[in-house]
Image (cartoon, rainbow, N blue to C red; front, side):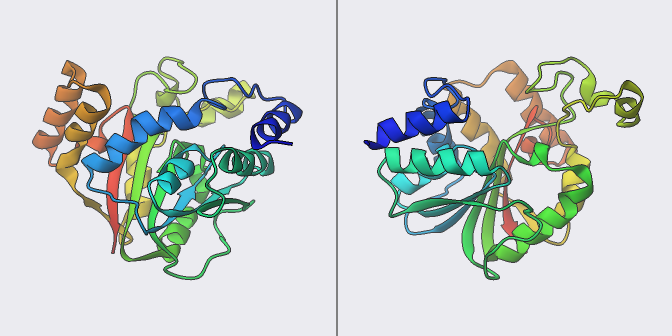
Length: 253
């Protein structure tokens, strides 16, 4: 069976449409979106040991492998890892990339200081608030001193409209509301909670590159982007803290 046939078969077995933009088309999407972000922040993947934290179907890792990195992806969902490895084979980067099932990312099967770069793309908002500090401690452990952590595509709880569900104002509801409603609502990640989890572990690197990255991805800088950048200058914060999607390049302390 060809790599493409295997990928399609695995996706179908998992009840996933292989032709969906965020499945079979995800690598192409990240090729167009992740590469300019890496360039804007001065990140050269060539020859680096990279951890894709929360690899989903492996798209970001495949892009970095194609750019010359040695990539290990981890995900808490076994089904994601299975499809990620099929995707890796489909794109012919098996020698440079692999995905592992790690059910609890508070304890990852890697040596201390194993990675030059950790990429967390659209994943930290799914980490349980009670586990965020332990997860960041583990990411800190496996990152080399002076190594980098790129957080991007991370839905922020500051946004009036939750990025994934598209629900208005749900980010501002206290979690006690979930218990009363008998349903857990998806929320973005609180920048305050992330800042606490990063304290003493990672510091912001290249804070002025956020607007450059937006221009590289979108080809222009919109008024909302300029407002976010202006708020960053006024507050002294990197603009990526204030964006609807948190985006930060961080360096390990």
